[in-house]
Image (cartoon, rainbow over all chains, first blue to last red; front, side, top):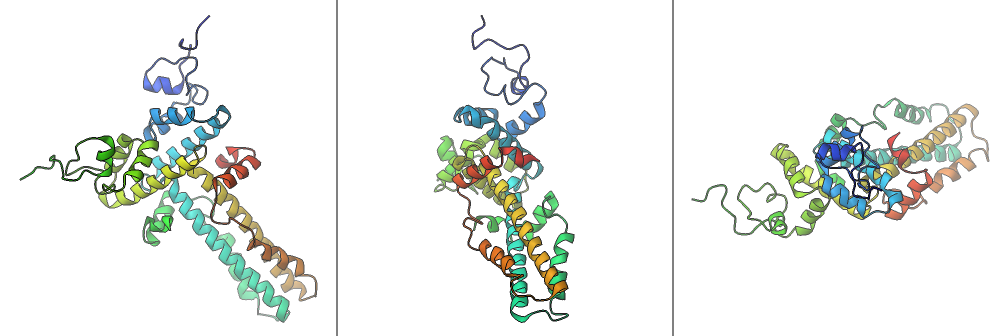
Length: 163
Length: 163
């Protein structure tokens, strides 16, 4: 019977890319099957195979799938945007949260005013128009590289991220 | 006169940690001064010095500072949360955006109803109460590791991140 160091028939994507023998207990094999070379090459390019292997080994098995998927997401974000990576997405989402909180407070104030003053024609129209515009604004959840860079540049660099 | 390969008097944090000679045009020196060994050790642990060096070399000089800071942020997030890293923060911020959008739409509907129906005592009170609660909910912008894991577990794993 083959021991745990024996090579398997079809090497995983990692071993294929690294041109090494894929052993039965290969740390990468469960998460990077043979047809996922692109997925492995992304994490290898950004984190390095050795670091990914170490990170996975330090985690319990039931957490490794989630770790692999978040590493792949992070690596792809860094390849797509070599300056900010997925930190650029965090920055834009933080801006979006602040913007929505402000709009919500405005709406809350509008409701309060109605409660206190009652309905008077024309008084609310401007508030409604402001809130309606929100749904017409582009890019609320999907951020392109250009939008991120433009937005971070506008905010005087990456300093905004680390306040 | 010393050429660009000569070693400098005080090695940068990277060369100190890697125990190598720090040359005058060292790629790390401008961003990891001698007293920032912890900052360098984080990015080295997660990305590897060689990968960081490659990433910086591929960028124009005026973008390298931002890249270093986003890499340090990302590395620290991964050290703090080895399963999700800063992808966990993205997930929570996305949830927060959806929550705020929902609340905003509710508020918008409330204002519309007032505009159409006019003020009737008791009709708006429940809406106001709901909106008031928003400001009392904890952790809107600062997410702990526990909150992220609990939240991702509740949402049936990391699948939610990649829809």
